[in-house]
Structure formats: structure tokens, C-alpha cells
Length: 267
Figure 1 (spheres, rainbow, N blue to C red):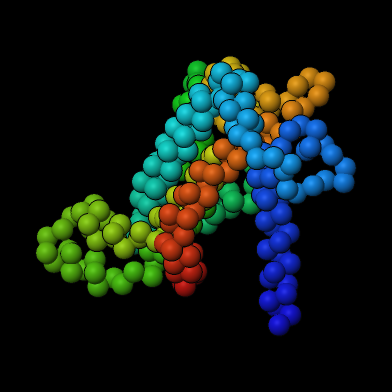
Figure 2 (cartoon, rainbow, N blue to C red; figure 1 turned 120 degrees about the vertical axis):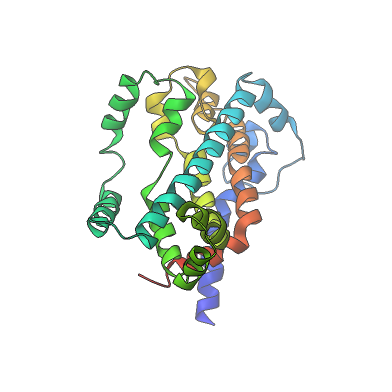
């Protein structure tokens, strides 16, 4: 019983900000700033949703930039992390374990420490203030490699041996035998990568300069004025930032749970 009560309390605390954001998206600015705060708007209006598209003509561009950056990083992470995971999990070569441990060691380094080196690399490549510079540091993530390795280690070796007997090449085994079995963990990796890229604020703030190149998370800051903030528009715009992640999670939820559970079966 106690665990159910605790679960309900945690659910309420977790969902309360999201519910407040939805409620505020239908309110006027004065209603949002009212004290004590009210949950139900005095009248339902879509004015805020229309306003966020007109208060800044760049809003659709920010959405498009976020979608492009997220799609590219998800695609590259699925391909490159699965390749690296296959090499670490299924191939035998000198220094494999040391390389894998060194790769995992980078997970311990806070992202703030690598921020300046990443910027220097992107700057020397001439990619500052561009989509390529935005996505380049995240084309493959160590967490993705780790998930792939853990999942692929649990796949029976007999499947590879049968493919080899049938004349399948090493890449053919990866492409036609291993990858189809990795759908759950790839779904989990896709969700993690999409969420990380879509929500990222710090790296776009560092590498992007032109408002037209901003992502949505960065562009929402433009809805804040110099002397005051249109909180009803900021909260409404935030919903556009949340909804794509909810859709992706709901679409891949079944694979996500399965992938995360199977990735932890074998260390």
C-alpha cells in the first residue's frame, strides 16, 4: 500500500509542471501571474498558440532546425553506435577490452569540460553557426555504444556461426542477423538521442549565433523580453518543445522498456 501511495505522490509531483504548462497555454498573461495561482483558465482560447507563431517569424524555422538536428543525430547514432557495439561485443582484436574501457571512461567526464575543446574543433573546421557544427559532436555517443555492446553480448553466437556457414560476410552478418535482433535497444537509443538533441540548450547556445539557425530550445529564449517576459507565450512555446518527445516515446515505449531490460542482462 505504501509503495502505491509513494508512486501516486511521485506521479503527481512529476506531472504537475506539465499540467500547469498546459493550463497556462490557455490563459492570458495576467491570469498566469495571478496569486494565488489558478489551475483552470477563465476561458478556453487558442490565442497563445496563434501568438507564438506570429510573435517571432522564425518560430517555424526553429522547429525545422530542431527536427533536422534530431533526425540527423538519431540516424548517425543508430548506425555508428551499432557498428562500434558490434565490434566491441562480437569481434576479437588486440586491445579491444582496453579500448572499450577507455571509451566508457569518457562517460565520467562532465560535458562542461569538453565544451571548449569541441568548440575549438568546430571553429577550426569552419562549422560555427551551422547545422553541421551543431550535430557533429553528437554523431555518436558513448552511451549508445555501451547499450549496443550490452545488448549484443546477449545474442547467441550460434546465429553468427550459422550465417558464416551459409556464406554470409562479416558485414552481412551484422546487417542481416544482428541488426534485426537489436530493434529494442535501437529504439531505446533513438529515444535517448532524440530527447538529448531536442532538449539541448548549452551547445546550441555556444555554437550558434544567427537567430535563423537557432533550435527551438534556444529560440524560446527570444520570447523573453528585455524588461519583462511573456510567460504565457513562453509556456505555450514550451509545449511545442515537449510534444515531439512525447510522441516519440509513446511510439517506441514497448521497445524502449524491452531494450533497457535486455541491455542489463549481461555485463
